[in-house]
Length: 79
Length: 406
Image 1: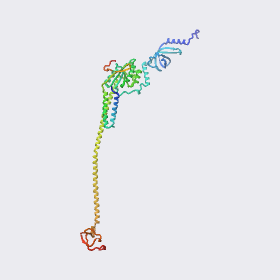
Image 2 (image 1 turned 45 degrees about the vertical axis):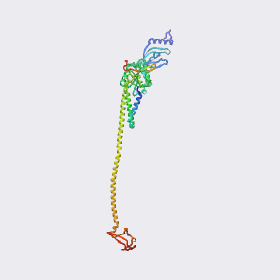
Image 3 (image 1 turned 90 degrees about the vertical axis):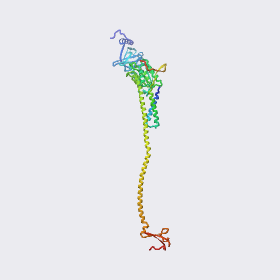
Image 4 (image 1 turned 180 degrees about the vertical axis):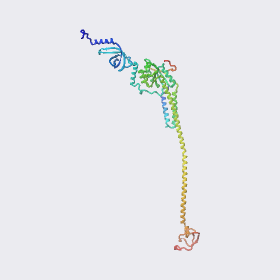
């Protein structure tokens, strides 16, 4: 399962890095480090969004107990 | 004149007669009027007046009759009611005992909806300030709808095609009928208990107003209002706004639109990421470009010591030429001055005195100039220098203090 919070944090980090880099107030060494980190973050965020695997589950409740079952959505029954 | 065998009624008797007459002559009627002085007694009975421009009649609707009433009776409401004209003896009042009542002009359900909507609105359930923002990207979405309906099929298909990164947890409920509202409300609460969920979609495909009615129920509205997770309401295929639409954080007109909203979020983020990626590249290359420019500037600055040297050399050259000039000048001056001195020297020279007839005697061999006769004695050798030529002589006689006369 993807971590939404992780994604949002990464995106925030990436935005900060872009800001820092464009400010031009950091040393070349830091710039290169941040650039590398930024590229990694951009790639991992994009990869998360491009993820093609998904899970569809059915939340069942019996006698107050909750359980998850796989839901086959490829062939939904007619209404 | 009064009859002799007059019958004297008691109050109760005459009331009974009137009651009988009214029940017989009027009985059950349909009556139209406006409600005023409405009161709901603690017993559950309703008491009110019905009036029009010209008259007023008291009304009562007992608890058994008003129990299933969907809308609220309130002052000013125009109604059509069915009931029986009755006399209430203890107060000498006639009234209508209402069995059924309908709002005039609108359906009872519609009125109930309007009244509930007004109440929830006043309570703040639709306040914009309470609306939660949707997450930047919902990666796990809960759906409350029927697992057999068209809504779930539409949503899943669009998500699969446009945003396959989104996981779905479906909580299947009935979406119409009497139990539906309770199930929907419970499902919203159950999904809120899940940890990984980002968003809930409450949905149902199109249908008549009656079909969608569960989404107008107070229990559903309150469940959505109480939801920790943001809720998208996607009910029906028509413009009719349900209460769940009004309470939800976001509402869209169709189940598909809810799914498309998530797909859009994903695409927007991808575009944004591409933009950030571009900015990264741009920033680093402009940083490098700046540094390169600085480096070039520094290289230029490194060259300058040689320039300094050349400059100094030039200065030295200039000084030199100045010096030469000055020296020559000084020399010339010296030459002039020495010329003058030589002239003066010449003027002072004893040789020039000699030319005037004086002579100079030197005691030989010392060569000292003879100034005093006392310094010589006869026999000393003298050298006498004349204006032209010289000669030596021997001293014959010395006069130390001879008068200066020749």
